Image 1 (cartoon, rainbow, N blue to C red):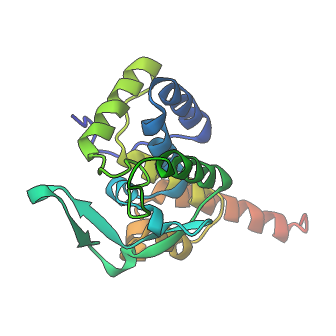
Image 2 (cartoon, one colour; image 1 turned 135 degrees about the horizontal axis):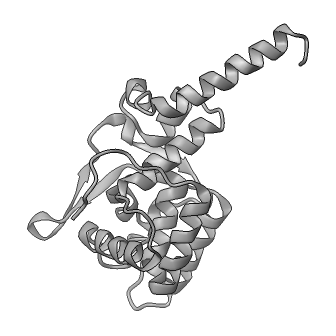
Length: 203
């Protein structure tokens, strides 16, 4: 059971600790954790990705898999959720690795799930493994959605605008991105310091 209601943020060092521990326990779930932290995808968006959605450098997020009544595809909740998300090199390597692993299986085709193969990986399984990792690593409890929060905060802290971050995250409006007020407050301090330096002729 997810026990937190507020946002929790993992920095890169803390995530790397979690990822390293997860990889030693179950590499399949570790790959999911890595993708969530470094793309900001929602969990079901990530689990619904197929190899057809990958073009070698980005993933096209356009649908979600629903497990009711035997499973079926459904559209995402908002039009802004449909987007292309550029990947870093390690995410690309993970997808390539998984393609090679599945492509040797009988009846493989590119409609298979990147994180599950011919069968969709249920959200509850990922959350269960996350809780096992938290207990094993001894890190503070976090929700799966906090990996998305962490990604968004990391981009804001590195100077990206609400518009750009919201577009990558698939937010329906900029006001949602502005919920990350703590990160924008830090950027505000940095801007004030920069302006002070400019005023003194130090830049």
